[in-house]
Each structure stands twice: as C-alpha cells, then as structure tokens.
Length: 120
Image 1 (cartoon, rainbow, N blue to C red):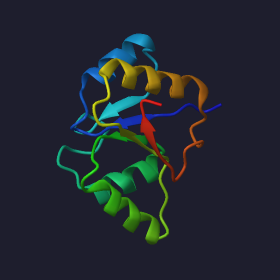
Image 2: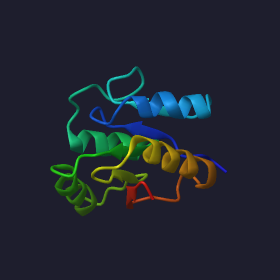
Image 3: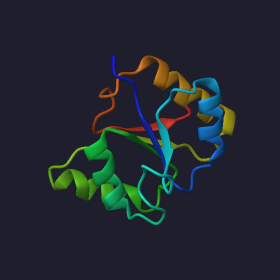
C-alpha cells in the first residue's frame, strides 16, 4: 500500500511536521517553503495543481479562499489527492494524532477529490 504524503500549508503550525517525523522518521511530509515543496506565497490554485501533480495531500486551515479555488479547480476537470482541513479550535495533539492515524491506515489514493475535516 502506498502511504499518504502530506504538504502542510505555510500557515499550519510547523510543530506538526516535527512531531510527526518524531513518530515516524520515514513519513513524507513537507511544508510550503521547504526544499522540494512550493515556495512560500504560492497561490491556492498553484498549490492545488502541485498536489494534483505530485500526489501529496494538502493539510490546511485556509477556510477563507481555498474553498472557492477548490471549486474552480474541480470545475476545470482537475483533481486533488485530498484536502485535510483543520477544524477551528483543534488542539495540536489531536491534529497530530489524526494525521498519524491516517498515515498509518489510509492508502495514498483514498481521499482523492475529497475534503476531510481533522481532527477526525
């Protein structure tokens, strides 16, 4: 089974990456702005295209602009590997636990074109 790969939006706490890599050092998890990831300030439409091309699942807390860009992305016949949207007021530990659980049990293509709120 091919595992999920995560791209954290630049506004998501970077501690999530640190803690997930502590739990599993071989997890494939990038933050926008890191080498191999889109640059900081990358537009939402470009992030959506990047995750479609690379197979990464986007972890974001962007409820303001992302939904409209996601709708336009789908209307253009495009796809995503999945969007994990952080719930308002979510505790960091719960987010980390949910992401680790998803990484452990879900296949990479399981959330194609879906938006899922986490913590679960």
